[in-house]
Length: 500
Image (cartoon, rainbow, N blue to C red; front, side, top):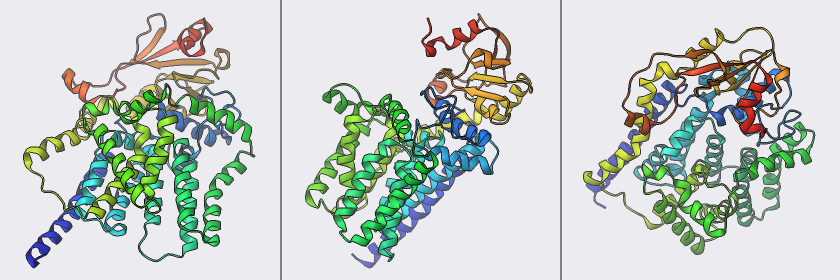
């Protein structure tokens, strides 16, 4: 390589680093500005927050809003990682949408920052390639949506990236400490979601295969056992109830159908409707699977990401529900596979021609731009504080109150100890006679019920195509219905109670 070529290459790498950090900074700032408005509070967000709210209020780890039997005595229907984070947040910050979501934005952008450093420092990947891979991940439609949706995938990705950073660390570290940290991170992953259990199993098996040193294996075992053991102590080793609740919930989100159906959903179906805007996803998934297979066959002992992609992916194919949002941790593993392939092949950074680059760039950025545009335009009708102020004028401050329906009700209930909340899908643990007043919050008209008020903030008329492309609901036209009798309560809860 000539001196001039080498200088141009170095200039390109430094430019890539500046571009990456600039874009990541803008991503974070826009995320911060619209953190409480896109999306408005929704089912999965409230489902994982409600046990933490009751834990802070009552001192007991329970849930009333989850339909699984037994959660009103102890909540074991979901791994505790996200609830622990929520409980920590609520002990420091007020129960506002912004503050509840802030740790997830920090974890998400922090994980992408760390992944970039892993690629450039630990794996010695060209900064231009590292920036391209990380920015592609950052602006993937599902990744962008999950970053704001307060789901456990954000925690899972952060822990997995941290594991990769420790595993691929270049600077010397005491091997016992490294083994303990790897185990500790795997133990934390076990407490986030069941789908990471096969990932942890593969990572642990490959660690043991690579290092037979008894001291390191003991350190790893201590690390991986520490946090799960602390949780078992916390729940008084109620393992039978843990199994009953956790696996009943997981069965509701597992794969179904024959093998060919599961293969279709894993490789193609899971990407619908995302690939309407990013049509290359199924092809990309197939390509990474082929790369992983080649790496696994060539150097099985060193092909850790390939092993995770293939072996844990096989478990996902057979048992995990076909939802693209579940795929985010494996997405990171796929990026690791691609980064190793680039290094192995010594692939030069390509020259992108405008006629191909600009359309692809527009397709990648469209979800980010459209959602933030709606966040700015629709802020008056998405603002949670304005909606909560409206509810304060409608909901009594005295007596036992139950709010049912729209998830903004949970944030209201978190502020007032006399108020309970339950989702539209799970009224099972709530009886009409237990409350002085019950209010049904919904944007669906129910003429058979008495409407007390309707929330009508300032709205901007937008063309239908913008609503269709940007998606997402608002609080506009949310109705407050008063449930006056047990018959009315049963009528709105009937689809979920199974009453005749």
